[in-house]
Amino acid sequence: MRLRELAAELGVTERSAYAIVNDLVQGGYVVKERDGRRNRYEIQHHLPLPEAPEEEGAIGEVLRLLAGTE
Image (cartoon, rainbow, N blue to C red; front, side, top):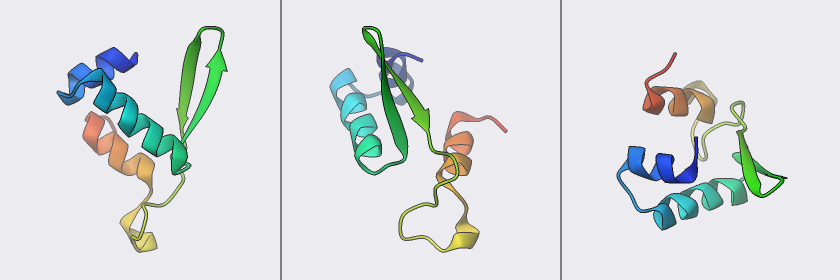
């Protein structure tokens, strides 16, 4: 998914979507790799949510719920 598509899906500006993704990169929840002229992002699904008990689950579970996928 392109950043433009992500922004449209979230109902925010591209700049806001970039800031969100950048925050996730800085937090270690997303790994950013350069692929030619594009950036590729990999979600670190296994990482726990910040300041949440272990039984609350990992970031990947929350993202799947938000995306509407199982």
